[in-house]
Image (cartoon, rainbow, N blue to C red; front, side, top):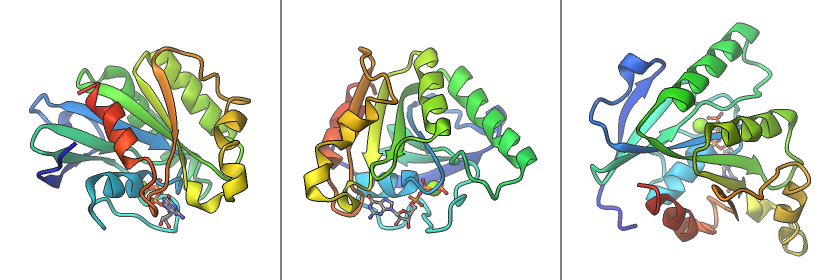
Length: 194
Ligand code: GTP
Ligand code: MG
């Protein structure tokens, strides 16, 4: 992908606020702090387009970033953040589900999990839910730079203990926003669904 432009477009919490221009969208979902906003920045070669934070819960709305005036990357609020109130969490859930279940422009979903840890119950629930949506899914194991070299090749095989990856619409990659590992591969995956 040659990136000619990338810009923040709009934030939304409900359907009326989604972009109206009918361009394709690729969304990113995953636990708070897993590295969704960082992945957007590293894909686009931008330092701070999507705001990141070491404090979980930074992204609280659906944030649409327009690329090459042609398609959107959609940063979705993280789930499983304990400090968000129960009501807020239910709202997040509703907002994310409304978007994922009804959005015609949504062409693919990137699900991020942390390479260092076993997937949480929420990760597994999110993945199984995504399978039901029948969207193309890319599972990205983030922060691979934090895993010892000798352990890196086990990350995907370990994931298979919790995620049933044997589906035609599912791909999997390790990733580092810091070292820019597999940026090109993520783009190749995105391009085939735009
Ligand atoms: P929420 O918006 O809270 O849902 O979080 P997020 O998933 O958008 O995470 P974010 O991109 O803000 O990253 C969280 C923290 O992890 C930040 O301190 C990032 O610098 C760090 N981080 C993200 N990706 C990587 C990575 O690939 N490697 C390393 N070492 N750190 C990373
Ligand atoms: Mg974020």
